[in-house]
Length: 399
Image (cartoon, rainbow, N blue to C red; front, side, top):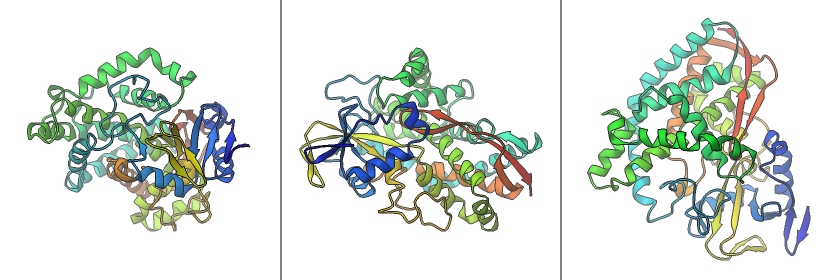
């Protein structure tokens, strides 16, 4: 770390494979450096402490999303796809799509899904356990369950669902620099984008489901017909990978914290707390960018108008200034207030859907599994934005 004027400077590359494999040392260094740090490698400013990240998330007027929530600045660069009406828009353009999606994903819709998702989770866990006591949790549980239930809820067909994960993976990689991770996904961008766009058309969607509800909102004039497919696309882009990696996080947490698994077994009502604590602890969405709309003061320093600001959600979620014993996965903690789903008007609209999926899967597992432990080395999946898993081999003993 070196100091430039009043802003500490770091030459760390948050998107290097070394950091993506283990970002925790970088997070600690950035938090300790100060409330604002200049990242010289990408010439952006960084926020890593909880208070500053939270403040930036809720102040959409000064920290805009409409210039892109990645490194690319939409003021000067053309985005690789039409910008998201939710993630990459600010009021007033953001308001109507957000209202529609909040209504579509509201409590009534989730109550309607709850019983079916619990039954699906129980059936999946039974299938997995029938195959033996050792398995890789990522392909057979944490990826399989969201791909089993969420596309059904949206109303897309069964053919081609395997495209959702690589499409989402590329979308989140594209928020970072044009590195090898972006290049790896580039050959399939046109194919995957075309497939996703086709699923967002009214005629491709089932007559009942989140997608049909969004199109019905356009019929009522709540959003325009041009907005409807982009709102459906937001569900398909952000609604699968993030949940997959959130479920992987909670399974990994329990496999490495047997005392917390015992605690959940004795009180299954802690399933949602467990998921939120895992989202705080592991932060499946690690970072998002904002752009300063004016000269913005952070601490004793100023971010000049038009400059990019990288918010480290994951670093904020382990900031000892906010959390006691932040590196511990602990079901006695109240994890509410974590920024793993964002905060403010851009807070994840589908977070309650993710919680419902997690609750269904954990409830099914805790009834059938007495112990869970790692059965071999885990493998990370590197992504410019996500904290992801390729493989989590586990060994379980049936209850």
